[in-house]
Image 1: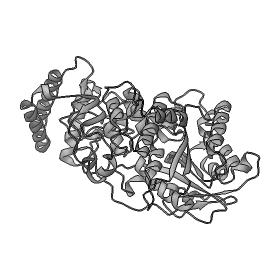
Image 2: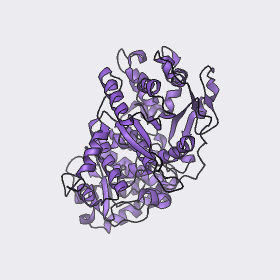
Image 3: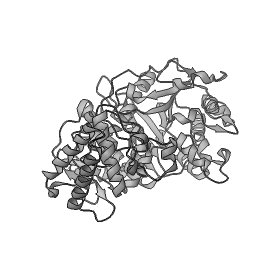
Image 4: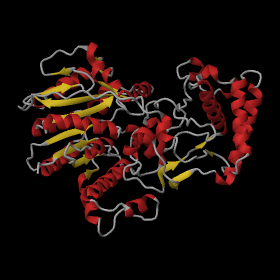
Length: 511
């Protein structure tokens, strides 16, 4: 039997990229990739990473998921039994909670990687350094920080955690993922992306050693960079992968670099084109949930409040927009014929018969609980935001697009200068049933304004599970921690299905 291709996963988050590699199988039905070390510093994400490593071992060994599903439902405090404890111990050994970019952290990771590889040459390095320093939104926030300078922000240079490993251990292939903003980010007034390409193409030289060079390939075009080339800014966009062009239900654009050692006379094939599933195909089968109210929450109070808002909007728009007014009348009729007792906000696990999840159900539903959904719990919203969500989602159903500031009634305008300036006039954004979603980001942890559920009767933002589905996480994936870090984990992750597609291309390079 051929040896496993070992995987070292840096900045692993909850393990989305690693999940994609684990799930890949070749023509013989064999799963060739095996993660030996995954590194994440944030506590909740590290717990998720460890739990998922455990589940992968259960699946690989053919063990039962019964105790794990009981853990998801909150019926057990630990996910393993005496029979599966060895798999849990192995999982905890694989996942390191370490801060990369520090002397002690980088030293520990190097030691553990060497020990895990055992001189194997058949391995790859994958991961995505934190993106806050590169993202457009992150850079906008940084401008508001007194005395902030990009040069002093260590996050700009976390990719260098790759360089020492590449220089000393020389894997045949590596993968680096980051936000599109990395293409335009500057340090000392110069674009940082050309420097990243130069450093990655010659990691040994950059770290003062001698060693092989790497060609840095795009996986969405034939573009590549090799040591000694001059970087042409015109071609930077060719390193961007647009997830919606490859069958993912999300408009997600990310820079993905595939480094191939110079002695390997191959280049990765570009990803295949595929039609993107819609939001409806991915989450419309999910259980109906009501949102909560930040004060005096209760099913009856919530239903009375939202029903009254629907009546008010119906009356105020009757002479202005009859179609929109009729939609609010329809919503009001729904609540007048619904018992508040059946309205749930969900929870850690909500019991509900499983139905199909659209065109990628075989991916999302594989080895999933049949009796419900984990991480499916709605948030509380302020009264005014409930009203805005109700208006925005109804508008989207009638007009086929999410409203911008000028479309809102004046009495629904939030007290933000950016609202009237046009800078953030799409502050309340509805995910449309008949389109892929917009980019799922960690900003979901702050509020749900950019991720409003398309059903106005639910009057809420997306849950962690709905966001996870749009990110192509399987339904048996459980996110640890409170809801806020759960949203961060989902938003920062590489979609596992995209990782699966990239794994195929990398396997072709080194199999």
